[in-house]
Length: 456
Image (cartoon, rainbow, N blue to C red; front, top):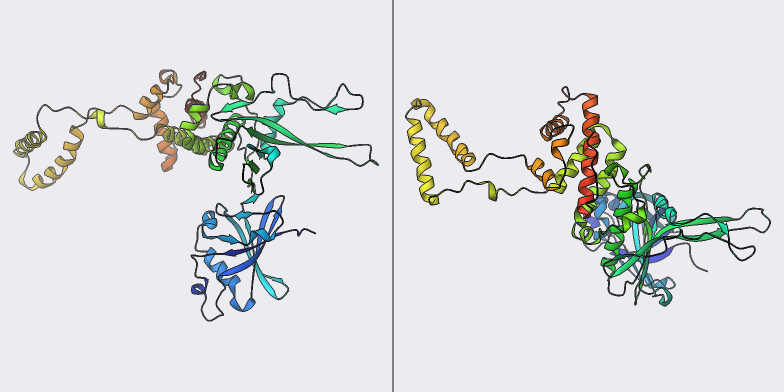
């Protein structure tokens, strides 16, 4: 009979636990552990001899580290004692909670919970080169657009939930194809008048024979970001299953608090598209190119929808700055007709001439200030880099209900707590404008140019 948990050995190669508490028996380098994988929890129990006081030492150690990087300290071994399990990978796991002082027989154990774990299983030939990314509850709103309701089929007594007309095809993503799907499971009792069909949303990939695990995970994340942006909430994967030629990789992720699920769509930026139309808009190449930015700005955009007010405005302004990136000063310098040495000499001559009209006791501070002025004199009058960026992005800045300079002043006022001159009505107008700007900038990162910004 299978255990309710996985057995394995765990160690922390770079950690000297005995340095945290002196005078007790030394901690063993390797501990036996049990992993419990429940619906909304991954618990690991690390067993130890009580006289080592490992529980206290472990608690003191974790208080000194970044919990998000917990997996970097962990090594696992002896996982194959579990039927079919080839490997347990905790390298990307973040620590969520710690509880010590638990007892199991003659041993004590530290109970920890982590946010994710990855399991390696034998390959499955019938699912070779495919992958399933199981979605959280927020993903249901995306997948439901592709299915009709339960309806009798041609066969008497049979019922089916079919895909909607025109929603059968897969969407391309470089060397792979994907589409939103439901996994169906049933719950029935012949003594009951009711049977239940459970629909589990997922993104299904196939054609993965030219891709490795990292590439498949990246492609899955890109589709997740697209769905999150469209739905205005953070869609995530709870379970990932990747079926490669030599291994099946299953990863489980515990969900944190989820954002409220607002009505999705792109109508605020002039695109009355279903998700199917969004997927057909030719975003693939741009999404891959701008993947690192999208990973940051899409969750921020959804967060701004939830918080609203001054916090929402600041988040949206941050999205603008992240999309803009750095500004080069190379083209802003004046082009002098003499060499650098001659230019420097001319500035010194100008300083000596000016010092003739300055009192002797003020000449030294004047000379110091002159050094800063020289730096400024080498550059042409500076245009607003934010305005120039928005013009480059094809946004109608001259039609904005608030000027760029005023948006910047509002941002500065909110950042420094100077909000006396910002009315509630102006903040709402600025927020609505920044919401549209942020949405357009994300669409531009995706290479989608069909948007229309409402500036009224």
